[in-house]
Amino acid sequence: MLTKARLRIMPHAMRTVFSCSLCLLLAGLLAFMTPGSLHGQKVAKYGADFLSGGVGGRALGMGGTHVGIVRDLSAGYWNPAGLAGLRYPQIAYMHAERFAGIISFDYAGAAMPISKTSTVGLTIIRSGVDDIPNTLNAWDVERNQPKPNPENFIERFSAADYAFMLSYARSLSDKLSIGVTGKLIRRTIGDFADAWGYSFDAGIQYMSERLILGANIQDLSTMLQTWSTNQGELAALEDFNQEIPDGGTFLVLPVARLGAGYFIPFEQSGLTLAFDMDIAFDGQQAFVLNTGDISYHPRLGVEYVFRDVVALRGGISRVLVSDDLGLDVTPTVGAGIKLNQISIDYGFGDFAGVSSDLGFSHRIAARLVLQQPRLERPTE
Image (tube, rainbow, N blue to C red; front, top):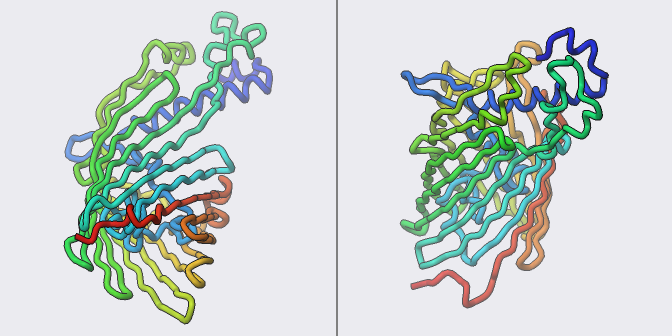
């Protein structure tokens, strides 16, 4: 991104940190702001991609197959209709490290029944890269070399995405429930650029004795993301012949998320088989199953639970296709333990497949069920 002359005279360490910082900054801005097109509209293909990994240690261990089978407070993300499965209030927290710890992901949620047929939930998510060096002011453009003591001019910033979700679910019968989630998105790249977005999801879930089916239309209203850039903070890019990105309003198109699960009981244990399929309409074609602008993202999961205390899980979270590798899948594994009102779940993924070069993904999630008689869902 710098001229060859500048690269030659830059000290190696300074050149490395400078190039990485500038690349991260520009890559972030361009990834968020470079749109596709749909009938003249600006479409952001990856405008809400930070939410695609989902929430919950159980979910990751099962390959992300949760749209159909979810019946706890994480349904606020996966399928709001699943909140109808709560009998008592629940609170949860999850921390995850992605790409060898480069990206931190945090989730907190709370949900509670408010009537015989209604449940509400709150979800808060943060995904970010922190402590990114900004070396734009450490280069002396007139002298064509680093400033004296360049480390004194290096500042650090974060690129972070936030999601705030408010959910409502209602039971229509003993087997059928519906739900909706309103979403507010906040995205920041240091002081350089920021965006606001909003949309809502709508879901439905059907549950019989052994079979459970679910569907969630994510961003049903089409998410609008409005970006603004700080031209003053980005002015230094002009010294390096870099174009300053403009802001604008972009669309994040809906995604249809379908899920199914089947429960097989055994003596003192049980086995759950799950399958999910995301159908996206945003033109993603690189390495994913697709027919034109429609892409398909299948997932598989299995869970074995012994005495409702110990759980072992496995799944396939991603199926990719490339000319070099052919068909490539990413498996996941996980485990969980339930002690009275507290559940601890661990998930591990990205240890195979093309994404393994970017490191592993770990999730640890804790969930507390406030199992008190006075907090139980009303029966009338």
